[in-house]
Length: 68
Image (cartoon, rainbow, N blue to C red; front, side, top):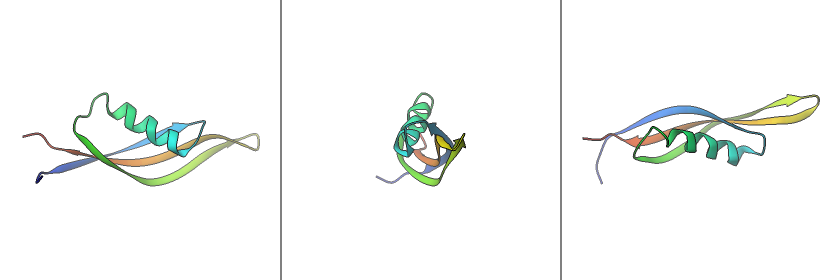
């Protein structure tokens, strides 16, 4: 279906893994953004503390359709 889309960029975090970090970002966005259709992982990184991985971080673009 034709339409116009807008993207937002978010950073999701999780101590569990990258997939969970993406889920966290999408879940949080769903509280205020309607008509989300897709996401794109732009960057993956993490935080290290005391020689161990403490947090996974992902930057995601989320696309949603503009309402008319």
